[in-house]
Image (cartoon, helix red, strand yellow):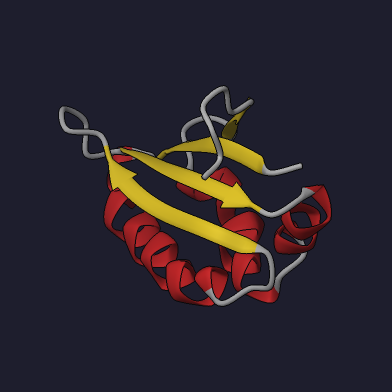
Length: 99
């Protein structure tokens, strides 16, 4: 079953540029992962400290493997200093046709 989710990361204002670099750097390697259907980074139109990933994975195994990838470690190891709140993950269930 496809895993679709939205991950929201809110930067501390003084860390916004640093977080942006880390997030941008993980897009390419993540898109190359087995099981990644799409992985898109967005920024909130009214708040430059809020970043949003929209992600689709072929299954739960692919998503769980993604969470263990080394290119996520710079973000995960510094999340307390970079983020003003914990990462919010919203899981989605697709209602429309998957074609």
